[in-house]
Length: 207
Image 1 (spheres, rainbow, N blue to C red):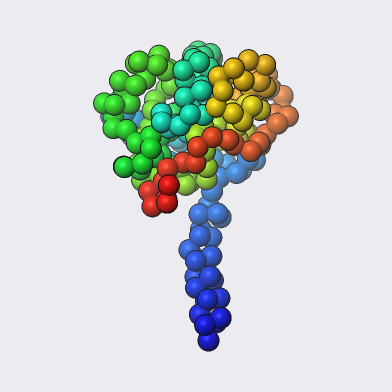
Image 2 (spheres, rainbow, N blue to C red):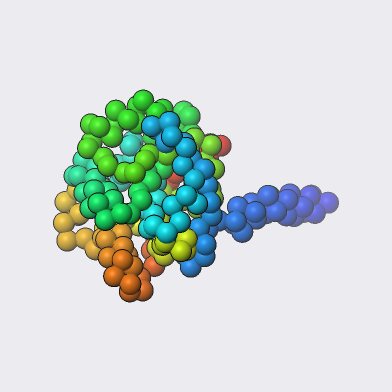
């Protein structure tokens, strides 16, 4: 009887988890539309940017791996380089209240000004709705969507999975590679990699 109860409980838990796994957007599939509120109090719909390349960057200002790319200026350089070429760049903060990386609009605006960050907008996602929609696992994690609304890259920012700023030099930057190839009309050679960094601090997580 105990074994039957255990199996039944596992089945229920699997059923509850299944929708998220089924619905999460994947490389080669259409990006799932979302609505997000920016730290500038503006509302953004992904569907409004159909016809443009869009980058989604998951962010946590308390994460050493995220800090690596901001204290060095690496992330800001990417943001400025690609938005200047018409790419839409959303920094997304899915940390829940009370979790590492959670920040309100005023705090995020101050942080971006201090760091010289230049995304199209920073989207506040305290419920984790956008993060779960894309199965974002780490900060940073990068997703690129092409003008047809298809995900063409999902994964790490580069191939040096450390929090050491010195490892940025000489690293293969997957975001640069994917956007460069896609804007040139070429297929993205590396479309998916394993993201590295701190786990996204979702609401209800144990950490």
